[in-house]
Image (cartoon, rainbow over all chains, first blue to last red; front, side, top):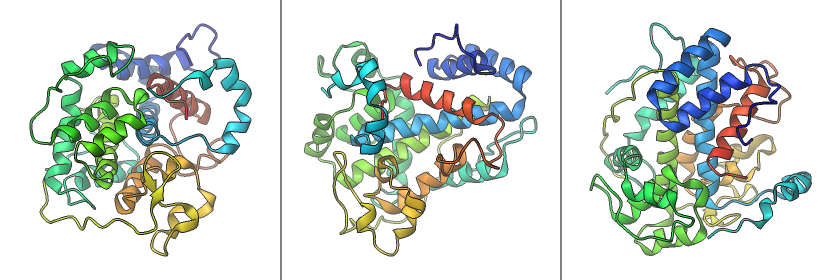
Length: 94
Length: 245
């Protein structure tokens, strides 16, 4: 999830990541180039649903972080090892 | 004002187009706690946040409390509202209970905060989608008339985060279906203090993403990308926003 796409095995992962990063960068030239690349590789409906997913996940994180909701206990259990590896539990709200 | 979520050159699936249209128009209408004019001002201030120098300076700091200043604002909303909108927009990963409490001591009602957040995230989602598919951003929605009811649901109580929410075990008959199918996730509960607006928000989100993400793969849900590709984008977007929920 750090953006290093060198070992990415997801079909069209590099193209999708570039599209996402262009949106986040708010760079219209970069976005135009990424849109064209995505359509060329995956088609127009892929562009629509990639944009829709990114839009949704511009909402969900803000909803979570602006209201301080914690992880549910079930998710906490199944992600314990991952969170330890990433040392996420060291993060404290300032 | 009308806006078409699609073009002659790019077809947007009907359910998504409808959900976007509904969300966009409703932003201009009277909410549960905010007037249509206030809601549109929230949308406008969200866009303004991207050009705010204070927000840029705060983002560069190790802590958003290292510097104090004034936001570059359109001047239509109170200062506390502006701070909520700008921080949610530009630096959501470092929001804190302290920030939430400051919004309250700054003069906002808790319910107003929740509706402002609701409008903000819908506006952001609409703008991200439209720019993502290569359309120009819509102009601000038409402003409707009317006064909000401003009635807090009696069953709301603080938790699981900083804000009051309606817990699944406390829902009244008029909101019981919101948690149908054991959809008790905290994210679904997060903005339920303002239940009417919360329903509308989730109508949009379900069309943008998936109504029930517990399904395996897509199970008949029509999308132009695979489930794995969707989850990749979801995880990357969340990581870039600094969200670990």
